[in-house]
Image (cartoon, rainbow, N blue to C red; front, side):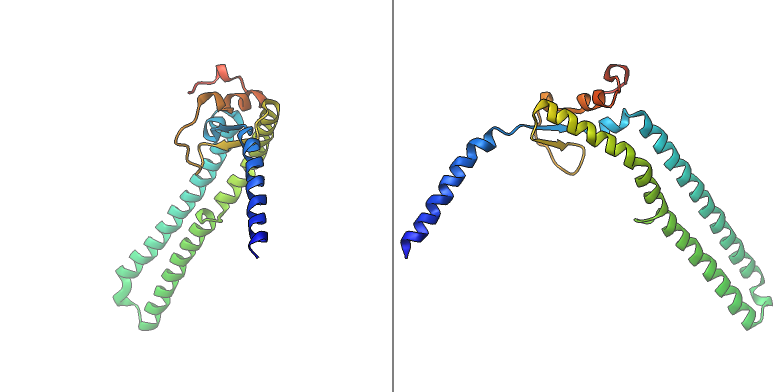
Amino acid sequence: MKAPHRTGLLIAALLLAGAAPAAAQQKIAYIDSEYILSRTPEYASVQQEVDRLADEWQKELVDRKREVDDLFAEYQARELLYTNEERNRRREEILRAEEEVERLRAKYFGPDGDLFVQQEQLMRPIQERILEAIEEVATAEGFDYVFDKSGDFLFLYARPQFDLSDKVLEELGIDVDQVPGR
């Protein structure tokens, strides 16, 4: 019974020993997507459009909130003049108006809200171009893996010579020397 177990261990050891040289030959590089995006001209216009939409929607919410506040102030000023039925009707009207403001806030600024959707749609072509450029540079330079150091992936140390960000910008047709940064 022990022989098949030893054979399995021997095969696993041989596979691991054979995989070690292959792993040692893999080339790894990284990019800084925030750096690349900040130097991509289209990104600034997309960000301006997103900011414009956010400001427009925020203004609408402020206006609606002001209307609710006016309704409430009017209610408080006249509360004693209203019948019980009228008081209840006015309170319901104020509550519905407040709920509408919150519904709009979630619609515009919620996790899957209009702002997020617009940003995703506007950014997608830029992101696709950058990913294609990364793939072109990585293939041309012979890299097996390319990580993004500006994401959640944590680099404790990274050699600058393995940073492909400037090469990706060049692949995108952006003159690195003309752009302020780094």
